Image 1 (spheres, helix red, strand yellow):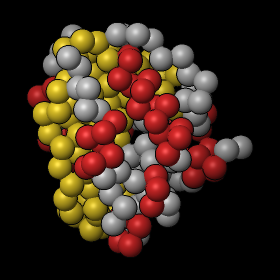
Image 2: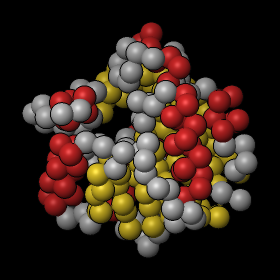
Image 3: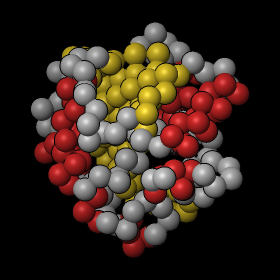
Image 4: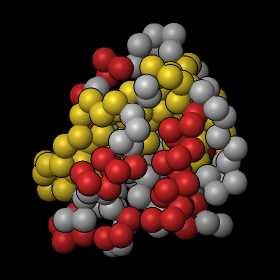
Length: 199
C-alpha cells in the first residue's frame, strides 16, 4: 500500500468533496464540451467539478484507494469522469490531447520529477488550450496548514515563469489566504496560481 493509499483509506475525504477554491474562481475556463485532464486528482473533488460543468474529463491518480473514493463521489453526483490509475513517472503524455489541463496541489514531486510533469502537461494541452496550476509557495512550510514539509517541492513565481515562459501566461500570482479544503488543507495558506494558454 502506498503512502497515498494509506492517507486516503481514512474515513471521509482528506481534502473534502468540494473543488479547490482556485478551480471555482476560474470555472469560466470549464466550458461545456471541452476535453480536460485532471492530474493527480486524488479522491476526485476537482475532476468531478470539471465534469459537472460539462468538461469531458479524464482524471489520473496513482492511488487505487483514492480512485475508488473518486468513483463513488462521481457516481453520487452523476458526473461522468474517466478515472485512470497512473504513475506519472511512466505515464505517456499524449501530444495536443486536451483543451484544459488542471493540476492542483501536486507537490509530492521533487524538482527533477516536477520538471518531467510540467513538460508532460505542456505537451498534452492543445494549442490554444489552457493550463490551470495551483499550489503552495515555500512559505507554506512555515505555516504548516497542508502540503509536504519539503520547500524544494514548492513553487515560486520565478520557477513557474521559467517553466511556462513558452506559454502565454494569463495569471501568475502568489498570495496568502484562508482555505478550508478538508483536514488536509485547512487554515492560513501560502498559495500560488498559474493560468497559461498554449501558443
